[in-house]
Length: 254
Length: 254
DNA sequence: CGGGTGCTTGACCGGCCTCAAATTAAGTGG
DNA sequence: CCACTTAATTTGAGGCCGGTCAAGCACCCG
Image 1 (cartoon, helix red, strand yellow):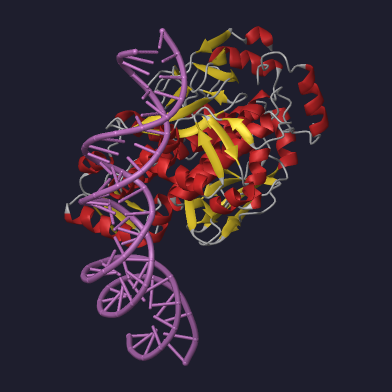
Image 2 (tube, chains in turn brown, yellow, orange, green):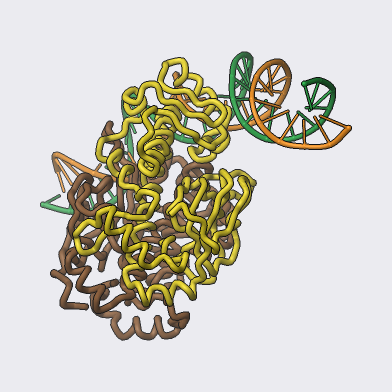
């Protein structure tokens, strides 16, 4: 596996991993840091499509050689592992299940995109903000479990949140003020603290089913519970094996 | 391809192929008709996630055994080919590239979901309607080419369009009236006629890149230009190789 | 300390929603 | 083929959520 990595690549916060319109002949696996996919409109406005945590695959596009219709930008300093499409062929010969693994990862993105769509299409600004924050918090906790407090580093500006939710940053600000006044959460300078999780879930109007689906995130070391043979990797093993590698940079997610 | 297959399952228009919350242990390949994926909100409102044309795969979910967070409903009388997850394993042993094929299909859905997301988040009602109609028209034409006129059977109600675009059917109606008055298109009782394609593209404010990406749809007989080796399969070879394996219906479907 | 980025708040406005009712098309049983 | 029913389309009046514009403030970093 390691042979096929054409090297880890480091990206500074705010830099594009690839830009909209780029011709894409490689795929990337995010191994550290936060990023987001985004599309640009003709008038220059931006829509953030989703937020990307380590383990995700970027740059796998339907038609080979086509130009990307969206870009990916690093939110924090990040690192990606680059795999050429040609190497992917060779790799799949040794690891036939890699196609399914890829399908699984893309399918996760699709599910999140669908959730996001329902939120944008049908929910109010308050619901959307609550929805997004819950989603990010739960996905974060699924990857780095063991935190006791409902607090996290969330490397977003209010403009990012607005661009993700189809709102202006001005309005996001008003919503966050309301949530703060109601004692639901605080979000100041990239520090998120959820004071009343239940109330937040109530505001987001999310059903239990959806919450569950966000928790199925792979642990960081890459042993994911998707398995065509039907044997699940237990949470126990995942956690303990993660501890073994916890000091190092996250492994190649593929 | 149009040959009837014994394993097909027929669904009446308006019926669910599977419903939100269903436990999903099989995947489906839509072999005929139109369908759409949808999510339901707690208050009963509906968000249509995307429209599904023949060739797409339904029911491939991230976590096995989990409950679906969305449902799929047939728009017209439709037929699906059912594949058990267990059969999928066996199948993938004989055809290792099937994982990649699946990834490719899911990746197409994801791209469409991303486009849809950008439209919902950042575009006006007029732009959204133009966007959706263009998308459906182009995807339709990519699958059933050879039509001369800018006309098609579009089995949607105005309420479907509203539910897809996060609008009310009332407002969709007003937008369609405007587009009709401007001589751009007519859409009456499931018959769509585009009088001025260029003006429609102008209203949608879609860049050329995106239009192109919608045209990469597989033709109906399943010879898709996705190929890990980089050599495009011509229609000829794909068709003939399909004939060699046409004994089981599942193979054709993927 | 100064410059820049991001946050905060106010006043005003407009696009889309809500509610309601009339009209047309499609489906159904006699 | 026609009465009847139901679903879908059409149009209007009025209201609200979130956008726009503009200004001032807070925090960070060199």
